[in-house]
Length: 80
Image 1: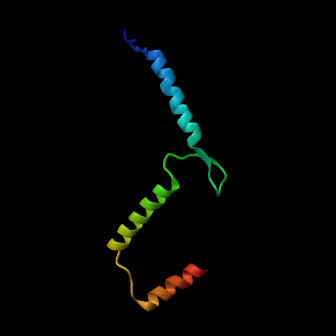
Image 2: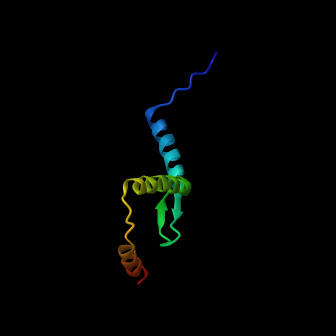
Image 3: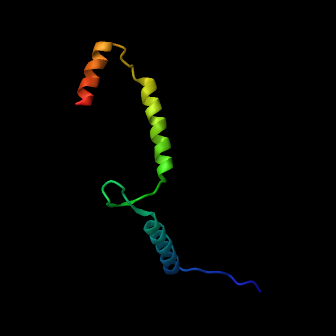
């Protein structure tokens, strides 16, 4: 006879909680600049890729200035 695997609600919650805690604990890392603990759900490469895509979309929608005087003023402010 085949054995039927029955699992009750309590056992399911114990397993689910254990797996979830295991994932959260392994996802905790230290931020390099502030050295604070943080929960990392996405890898850095994914976040960087999404940020680059968003930046490209913003650049495409933004009208860039070609006025040399205005650009020099901005550079002067930025360098200070």
